[in-house]
Length: 377
Ligand SMILES: C[S@@+](CC[C@H](N)C(=O)[O-])C[C@H]1O[C@@H](n2cnc3c(N)ncnc32)[C@H](O)[C@@H]1O
Image (tube, rainbow, N blue to C red; front, side, top):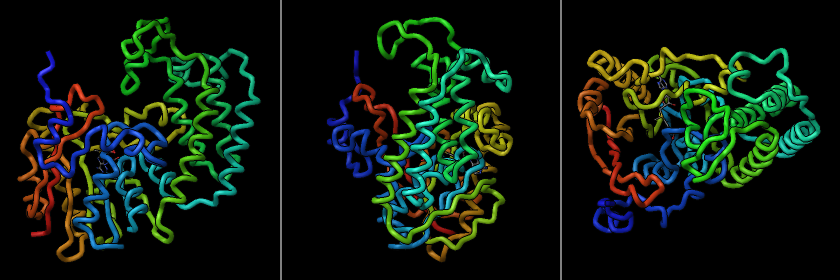
């Protein structure tokens, strides 16, 4: 029996101007333009950032996100007329944010991407693993898919838009893995045979080629970057720093901070893009990622998590202008954040609760998060 309230009923009974139902804020709006350049598990939505900026950060000011993730804060900041800086420890996330937020020469970008599209279209796989295919590639990709992906990788360095091609390659590599359709986030082993697909309610087959993804995502990426170029505020700039936000020089001062820390033991932010690290050879810094599931959720892991997050927030706090606000989006079911704020030298001045729409109205009642608004003590 379904006992959860429907989204509409739920939103009617809560004063949640920070909560949006599927009907008022459909998926295509939450993932408009560059927000959809590559899947990322654990992001917040741009509309939430938009409201937080308007409420808590001086108009036209500089904003920081020390846990930048897929770059939602930075992209929205550019759209709303702010300069922004983001930090992330995961190299692929830093690459993705840079590709989303840097300014482009659109003529050169179009030329590079259409050239890569034509090259990928003309390539004919032989159905054999290339010699340079790693164990990972041989395990997770069918021979033709491996050939197409590695051929595309060979195109990357040949154009100025190399980082954009890297993101297209990663997105295609994600879709072309031999996995079931319902286990794309963290597949444990390759799916080699046809299987009953719970998502599509029919028998599905594992992917054998990467070509259609490479072609489709190349054109989609071009469209999305062009759409964002028209939506971003001229002269606003974003900077992306790859490193540990506890210790990195944040290059402040900032008029406000909008961020969402990782939660303990929930998502491995390096592992979710494993294929990108494997194919692109990006530098991994897993040991510095806070809250990693591999650490568990025992007492020692929680202590380490609290020290880590308060270290980041303290570093961020010291980069704020006098009276500047820090908005921290959390699901604090372990009740860790009053102590984390205390240790980081922060004082809570406001708190909003919001319902998180997880797309299906059936599960409407299940997930809430808080936005903690803090200032330096
Ligand atoms: C909840 S996600 C942020 C998602 C982001 N709000 C978005 O919308 O995409 C947390 C991020 O913190 C990053 N992270 C974890 N430990 C870090 C550290 N020590 N320094 C900087 N970033 C870190 C993770 O790699 C992950 O991308």
